[in-house]
Image (cartoon, rainbow, N blue to C red; front, side, top):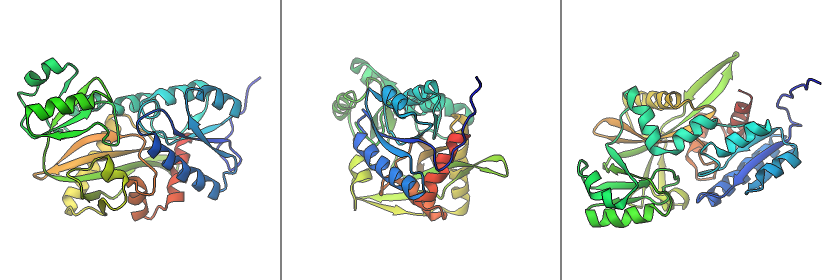
Amino acid sequence: METIEKKLNKESKIAVLCGGMSAERDVSLRSGKNVFNALIELGYKNAELVDVDRNIAKVLSEGRFEYAFNVLHGRYGEDGCIQGLLEIAGIKYTGCKVKSSAICMDKETTKNILAPHAIPLISSVCVSDESELEQCVKGLDYPLMVKPVKEGSSIGMSKVDNLQELKDAFKLAQKSDKKILIEEYYQGKSATVGVLQRKVNGKLETFATPILGFETKTQWYDYEAKYTEGLTKFILPADFDENMTKEIQNIAIKSFEACECSGLARVDFLVYKDTPYVLEINTNPGMTDLSDLPAQANHMGIDYNSLVELILQTAEF
């Protein structure tokens, strides 16, 4: 018997997926609570908050969910894993799909995808073996940033000024991931751009939010600065001239499309000597009270609840 596919409506059973098993669990729980409250206020009375663990397949099946609003951050939620499970289960979900999620979770793979598109990237190497560390970084200039290849929220990241600091930072980063990205550090302006999609007159429109710049009381935009109130000052819109603003927004959309993203993402930049370098693409941006994307959307007239509605609609694309 042929089944009739139900369209999204106020009666739809929606799982707000949050928490999870990554190092970003606490941030995800905060995001999830906000999204859940917004859905209830919007009239989606069958929305449920789901703290994801290894029993998630059973929970989704027994809950008979039709849609998933994915607010998971990091491993298993942002790397294609939960996306694949949802597709197997026949549940429509928000945000990027399996392939783009896997690409963007891996900083090395992201750079490899973006490089042929003439997108500015900071010089870097990837290292898995500490014994090869000194040799691999010979082509790079200190100071350096040390980043786990598959981690978010600046977890496991360090800025180093010499080889001994690099060795210590490498060991710290390997607590989060075996493969480590080592990238030259530029003292430039940090900025981030949200990229969203919506249907206009039946056609899919991809658009960039205003650019958000920030000044931190920490040395760089680390985990503490991102999630502790008062440590980061948002500059919205960022203080770039019109030409640079358009260039950054265009590169953000170009990066989004090159990695085959969908629904939403956030592209992080470092602007140094008039060049906007792409640092990474976050396919499931935070939705906390202090997160970038809600602030950017609000600046262009999209309040929090409207942003949640807009993202939810991407599950129908």
